Length: 357
Image (cartoon, rainbow, N blue to C red; front, side, top):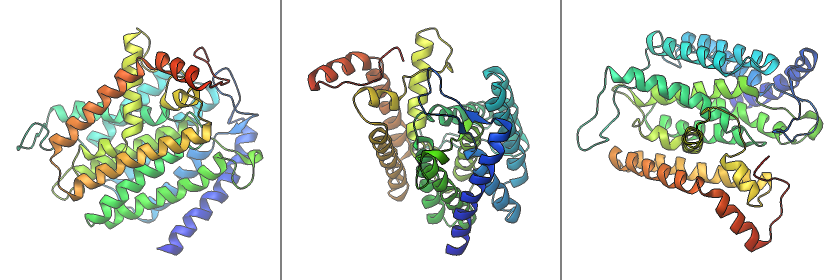
C-alpha cells in the first residue's frame, strides 16, 4: 500500500507539470482582477490532475464505489463543464443546470439517495424514501457549491479536501470498508502535491497552480457521493448527520453566506468577499495564518464527528448541536463588520483589505 500511495503522490506531481504546459497553451489560466489578488496568470489545473488520478484508480479498481462508472461519467462531465467555465465563463445558470442534471443521474442511475437520516428527533430512525430524493438533490448542489465557495485563499480548498477525505478514511477503516478507505486515502495523497504547488512549495511562485472551478466542482461532487455511500444501507460506515461534521466548515460558511445574501435580496451565489477566510484577513490575520486557523477548526469538527461515531452519540444530539453552531455563526457573521472595526481599533490593526474589496 505504501508503494501504491507513493506512486499516487509522484504521479500527481508529474501530472500537474504536464497539465500546466497544456493550460498555458489553451489559456486555461486565472488572471488577477478586483476580487483576485494573486500575481500573474496561474494555471487552473489542480482539478484536472486530481481527476486523472481518481479516474486511473477507479478504472483499475472499478468495484470501489457503487456504480464507479456512473460516478466517473458524472464527475467527468462536471470537470469538462468546469474547464469550459474557467476558459469562457459560462455563467452560473449553465453550471447549475449541469449540476442539477448530474444530481438526477447520481440518484437514479447511481442509486445513491439519502433515505435513512438516523434518529434526528428521538429514539426512532427517520426514514424518508420519497422526500429523500429532494434532500439528496439539495445536498449534491449544496456540496458542489460549498466547496467552490471555500476556494478563496491559497491552500484552503486543498486543506478542506484533505481533512474531509482523511476523516472519511478513518471511519471507512473502522467499519471495515477497505476499498473506500483506500480510495479516500488516494484522494488525500493526490491532493497534497496540489497543496504544495498552490502554496509555492517547493518550486516557488513560478510554478503555482490553482484548482479552478473544474476542480472544486469535482471535489464537492466526490465528497457528497462518498458521504451518501458511506451513510446509507445496512453496512453503512457512519450516520448521515456525521457527514455534516466531516465537511463542517464549507457547509457552515456556505449556508451562512447564502442566507445573508438572500436577506440582502441578492443572488445566493453572487461572489463576494464575506467568507470566513476574508473576515479573518480583515481581522489582521495573514493568509497563511487564516489558512492554518480554518484548517484547525475544520479538523476539530471532523474529530468531533469521528468521536461521535466511536462513542455512539445519538444523531439527534449531533444534529441539533450542528444546527446550533450554524445559528451562532450566522448571528456573528451578520454583525461581523461592527465586531471587526472594534477589534481592529482596539489592537491598532491595519490591513490592505476593506469592506468594499
